[in-house]
Image (tube, rainbow, N blue to C red; front, side, top):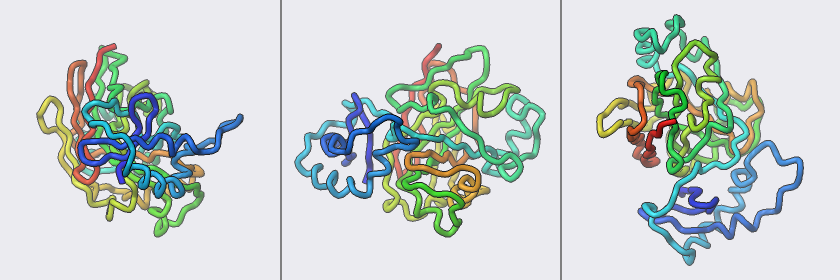
Length: 285
C-alpha cells in the first residue's frame, strides 16, 4: 500500500494516478496530550489503522495526484538518521573532490558511523528545496529511506526488517564546507522526503532496488541499493546500538556515486521503480 500526506495534513492511499482521502480514519485516533510522545503516533498505530484505511478507500473521495500538494509522508519523525559514505564508488568520488572531502579521504561508514539531521530540515516534494547559502555549493544525494514502525533497542540484525513500517525516497541535501556534517545537512528543507511511503510488505528486498536521479533531465546518479556497504538490516542493527528507535524515525541509507551541485531553478527527479519518483523544484533564498 502507498500512503501519503497531502494538502492541509490530509492522509491518503495512492491508487495509480489518484489518491483516496482516508483522513477520517486518522482523525479517529485518540487525542494527544502534553507531553507529546517522542515518536509519530500515526506510524505507531498503522498496524491497526491499515485495514480500516483499506476499507475506507473503497468509498472515499478521490483526487488526482497532479492536483494535490504532497507533504512528507511522515509528519513527526523523532530522529532522521543518516549514513555517510555507504557506497564504495561514492567513497572514491569523495576522495577525488576536495570540495566534498575537506581533507578527509578514504573514510567509509565503518569509520564515520552515523549522523543526525534536524527535524526542521524535513519537507515534502510540494514544499520544494530552498538554497539558503547561494554562495556555497549544495549537492543532491538520492537515498532509500526506511521508516521505523515500532520501538526497538539493540535490535538483532536478522530481525531488523521486522521493525520497518515501510520505505520512501529521500534527498539528503548537503551544504559543502568544513563544518560538522550534521550542521551542513540540517539546513531547513535539506531532507526532502516522499512522494509517499510504501508499506514494507510490498518491498521484498530493500537491498536490491534500482535507483536513478536526474537534474533537468540529465542523468547524474544511477545505481542500486545492492551496492550499500551497510545494508538496511545492518544499518538498523547498528543504529539501535546507539539510539532507541521509535515509530516514525527515518533512516536515510546513504547515496551512491554521482552527487553534484544544484542551483535555484533546477528540477530534481529521483526514482526507485519499486517506490516511485520524487520530483522537487529548487528555489532560491
